[in-house]
Length: 484
Image 1 (tube, one colour):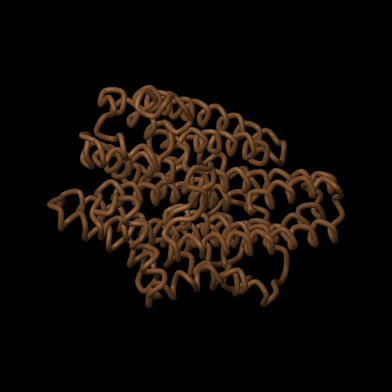
Image 2 (cartoon, rainbow, N blue to C red):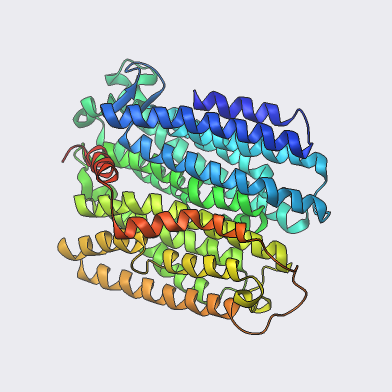
């Protein structure tokens, strides 16, 4: 079982800090994770669901989508970490003995996210999300300098407040469902709750939905609950930033989607929770425009971009049409690949230039041409430029706004995305061209181009959607919309 792989891998990391041991143990664990997780995904998609109907481990198409994101990004990020963290040790930024703790907490983090997407119980999902906070707090502040510690404290305080709201929402749901489902854990089982959806106390459910969206929304990074995100992303080691943005935010969104599916089946209908999600989505998209335009720190720029894309996803899922939900499901996957790649390549760049300040980074295409090429691809992908897959997914969401009679929302969303594109173009062109400033570490290997693999996948999916992926996304739509 892949959850066990994550826990065993974490414990194994504490055995030694030697580079050869960490590489061998991490690679072994990644192979086992990919094999066990891949088998579970295949079984789920071929059967529709997989797991014990009465047990605490269960997967459907939505679970499989998130599981695939976790596994793919985990493999990519940990393989990058092996070289990146060794350089941090060589440059005296970290002690070698701290490496084993870095990988320990990374694997605990991965295991907690695997728990979130592998249980049918909304209460255990809450526990898993809370466990991710504990695991990631220690690696957000891993460098132990003043800025990193402040970011870790801000992260744990704000996310704990948010997750407390989600707990209150979960308790309200339990209060509504327990009399109908025998006062047991089954009262929070998303497989059983649809059977009693119309009998739930609507006042409890309405309050529960509000608290859940606000609570988990803090972990997603939706405005105005996003304040922790730019600090945490900018101060954490770059591989950790990639996991936070590409995976953790999606896992918190997954929790919201389980609530959304339930709310659609009650008298609240799709409009109640959908309106809340679309409001947070548009607000997140609009507010991030200013931050992206004025940002000077490259990692904070990517963090604000994550908030923007979570807003796009909230718009798509909140709209609740088949086309929009299909596009949002695809975008969830593509944004994960794109943002993980950008944090990795930017982390590599920051390590070489010694700065995160955009005005101090110049002439990258001249000094580091391979890095520059990947940055160009990343710029086009993250801004949803054709022919990248992010353009296809965003187009599905935006067209859904117009088709459902929301032309003003559609116009505002397009306006925001256009300005964001201009902001990214301005920042990236400054870094790519011009005269290099300061002392940059010389040279780069052609192997750097291997870091672009996720972006090539995003490009391919913009040109062609394989039948198997389309069928998977259609299954995800059925799960979220309740078969409508």
